[in-house]
Image 1 (cartoon, rainbow, N blue to C red):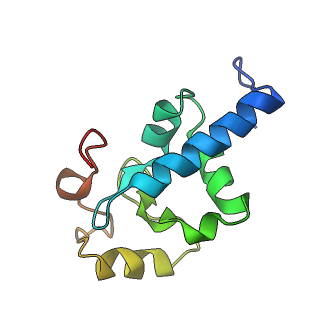
Image 2 (image 1 turned 45 degrees about the vertical axis):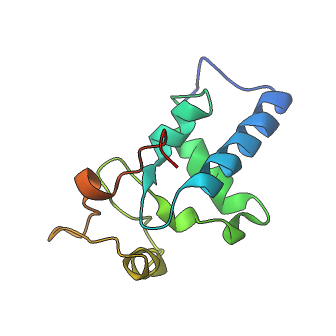
Length: 112
């Protein structure tokens, strides 16, 4: 794993987790955002993978709209086939390559 020059203290990790969960709570129905955007909004732009780990391993995160988080190209999480169904149920459309149409569905986090 990459050794980050900007490693977090335990307190920073707790704050990061709380910020990530708060941001995910705000993603509107029918919109998506990216792991990288969430990491940047939480103040740690080089920690997009940690966003994924936070969503996967935090108890209770499954109650959040985690399905609205995709990678920067609009690809859904590997091994989570239900994610696409959940997004489609909200009206999110996919391109022929199986990726979310990011130009149309990317959340403008300044507008809720």
